[in-house]
Length: 350
Image 1 (cartoon, one colour):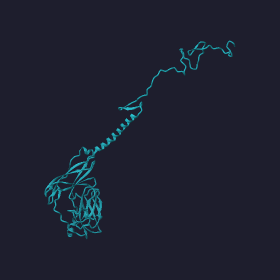
Image 2 (cartoon, helix red, strand yellow):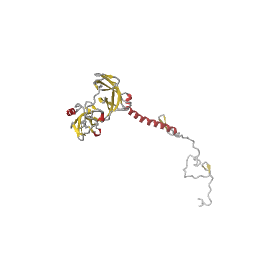
Image 3 (cartoon, helix red, strand yellow):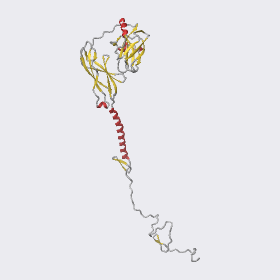
Image 4 (cartoon, helix red, strand yellow):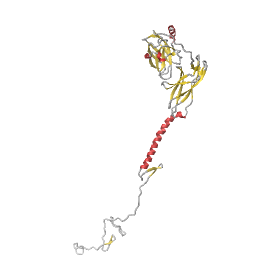
């Protein structure tokens, strides 16, 4: 078995095609305490990856037992560059299970992708892999698509919903009955949120079936999403989904900000109109009514403080009083005749 691993070690080139993620190792074998250089290309740009040495694994079957078969404490993380490439030093450590071993590279965020490259840990025990059970295996045969459209309620923030439609074929040796698929939705670079859905039916060996699974996003979701389909721990298909912004919610809040202040203003004006004293300006039926103070015109009476007007046609100045002779009427009354004072000389006596 060890000789077989050494023969296959030089073939540790990319596990997938040139248009898919690939991994290369600087050495196919190393002992504990050493290190190797792991290089990759064809990955998504700016993606966080985890590099592990795992036992009981081959590229055709993946890591049996998951990360429990890997040396997790000595793993390394790396982020791809803008071209989707990376280069990282990895210390050699013994996994918790026997070899055959691989260097396992998998994405941490975003769409799931992983690649295994054959690697031999010198001095680590090697045991044959457990026999693969004779079960059915499903593979996607036709392009995956999302059916459905967004309605009026979605425009107001209702959860967007679609139907994931795909065709699978059974490439195994036994029928697959009521398979359970995992449907994941990822927003941007975040990890998918998985939901298990069971399809009721049987796919015989060599046959195919058309499957429809519902997909729903949270209320108010918008932006670029990715719908992933997984079965038996393997990624079968991915489908992008662009969700429009719920502009109805924005319109609702704009109207709410306009209507509520207007209503409060009208209520306040109505209260002010009721508690305002009478005789002041007030608003009625949308127009302003000005109530002026009332004036009463009265006929003026005689003023005792001022002298009565003269009856003659000539009005006298207030500071000038003409000489009046005996019997002359002054202010309506006859004046008494003036007599010369005995001490005042007269013109005839001088």
